[in-house]
Length: 143
Image (cartoon, rainbow, N blue to C red; front, top):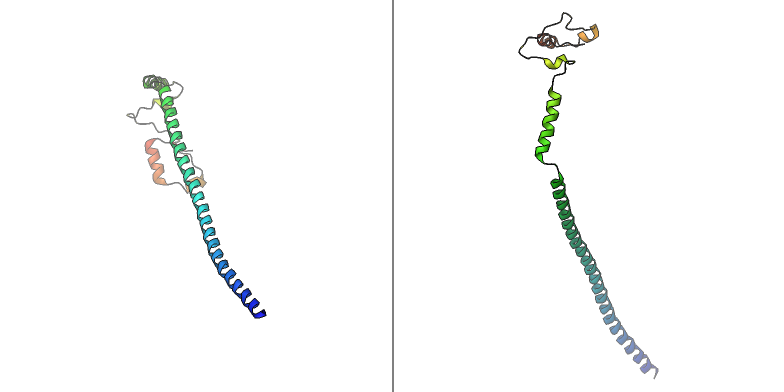
């Protein structure tokens, strides 16, 4: 009888082991399916966020376009702007008697003052003599 009891326990253990392997396979499959569901959920949320961003960007672009159009329409007419610019230019082009340099006539030869160049010895060595001659020819005074 002890042998029969031992054999019965061995068969029961063998059957439990078989079912344990089937349970393990199903649990592994379940874990894989749950992992796939988690990934799918994350992808769904990401796609929804992208779609929302696209719609919001389009709405923002449209709003900016409408504001730009309103801003453009609220600008003064170009005729008024041209008049203001013309008045400003005319006002500032007038020659002021206090600024004789602005009355320079390019057709006249400039008069060369007798002390055209004033150089100290330190600057003389670094000065390009060709530039000095050119400056003298054009009446430019250096200090």
